[in-house]
Length: 206
Length: 206
Image 1 (cartoon, each protein chain N blue to C red):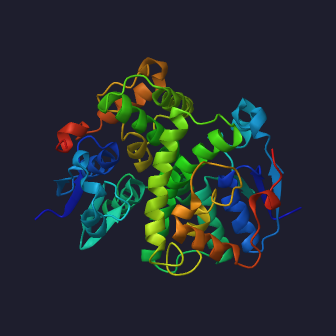
Image 2 (tube, rainbow over the protein chains, first blue to last red):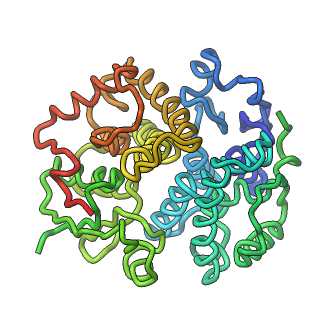
Image 3 (spheres, rainbow over the protein chains, first blue to last red):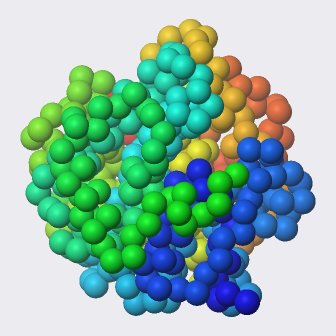
């Protein structure tokens, strides 16, 4: 019986945030595959028993259930003593970027990648809209990373793991990654962390 | 010189979250109008001096600057001793809903309202897409509010103030509010809190 169970599926970058944290901190954990593409998270029973918000990831640990990737990362940082803030100011900076990530960086990019790269809608007014917004968020993060190797405090933290949720996904989005050289360099730094694995190596695909 | 300064503009529901918190807790505060629609938040000087993330609200207090509405609400709850969590479990529940709000409830609805109600694009593939996603988020919150008068702990908390950021905005979105009776009842409960004011009464319009 593993210490941590993570309800997830490989295509979910939000689940990857938690999976990579569990892996890099060396936890005893196991993925529980969620059949997302056949609507499991939309069923009444899943919502009542696993997560009312109808989302992955869901983490089970020590008889408790945790949802929302940013809260899961925060919990795991406290549990493991790794990749968390070392001061009140860092705590605020980490949350500031995790919130920006949830609202914009991951949100716009993940939706674009879902439509264009997974659902394969082709180019539509909707993909154009999300690409424009994702590009603005990427530019802002690229600018930030031109001045610091990691998002907060000069070392890998859960802020990086949050923002990195979807950036290693292999699907096409129509964005030119070479336009964001500081993000590319940051991705290389994350990949160089001992134990790093790609999303589809860590979690089964749905 | 007021104790709190809030960089904001009336049309921003994210700023309204902080403004309403300041007002309901009886703080000495003053709005600082941001000329959003003429691009002030996109200028280099504003980003360097006020907020790198290019967003309102920004709160100034005691020589410090705070951004991201959820973090500002959390800070003000700690400062004022009002509308915050009373236990670790409530803390997690409040953050769980504030994150859901940032990612989905506010995000989709605010974008729909911006396009359809403020920019007046008319109905497009993009407004249809956001209305569908906003509707799903509204249904989920409506379901939650069918079982509890406020989002967390049976009383008004910063989780409610976060989710309520855009629900009092008067602009048309093409959504039928009567489809969400529990949200309508919750809005009435919030409006009944002593000191409640609408967004355009609390902040100057841009």
